[in-house]
Image 1 (tube, rainbow, N blue to C red):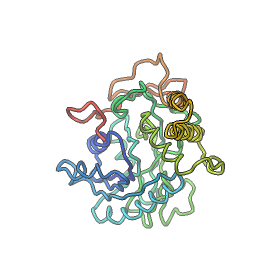
Image 2 (image 1 turned 120 degrees about the vertical axis):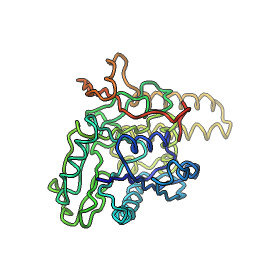
Image 3 (image 1 turned 90 degrees about the vertical axis):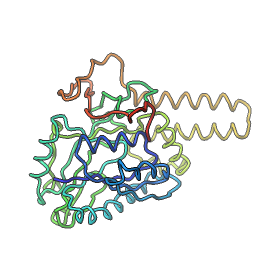
Length: 325
């Protein structure tokens, strides 16, 4: 098995942590990246420690758009599949720059099931769980988080996991951001899928895992989509809708500050405090949780919908405590 990661990234945080984890803990032998609006990553990705593992294409996009992102992801995956086959790779993993693949029992069970999937089941699917921060001021969530929501009804974002694609399957293509299909399974359904048990592999999703990342993302989306009610009606997640509403309040307050209107500073303060409260309500773990098990031990599943676990191999960059992205 020689598997690789395909990803579309934009202004990621702690990105070298992400690269190193998937190389060292998941055995990834190649990264195919579409890098948007982040020219600062060129120095890292062309450095000797990554140049032989990473193929990166740099693009300038400007505004973030909630509804166009999946089309660009699908196009990137389609362009990578023939290159990955030509390089002799066997499996393609599509994940984002805020996700890690965690194997509680180590790599051998994952590798056995990847080999067993075959071309008849080109979509090797994992569940996802969602990160909760230990504190609002966490610098590197990949290294610090030990709590994850596991009840999908409580998630802030998607609930339908991510997948490996079997490159030997004829006509392999992405089926949205979460699945793969082949020429033989293009009708959909579950017949072309192998669902991995959570004890073998899950996706750890660190969506909006710092307040700064959340603020940047939703301010961009609010600028792009404005106050249009038809936009909110198409957004499926309560957290996203509430975040867009909060970001619009921040934009209105920023406009008042620029115009120096009466009470502008007070409105800016209230909008910022409201935004921090909203983010913390969704993203910070509750107090009083039992300690997590050490790396390599079985995750602790709690009845309130939180799993405590310690992903092995996740560390900050050498000699650096601050974000490395």
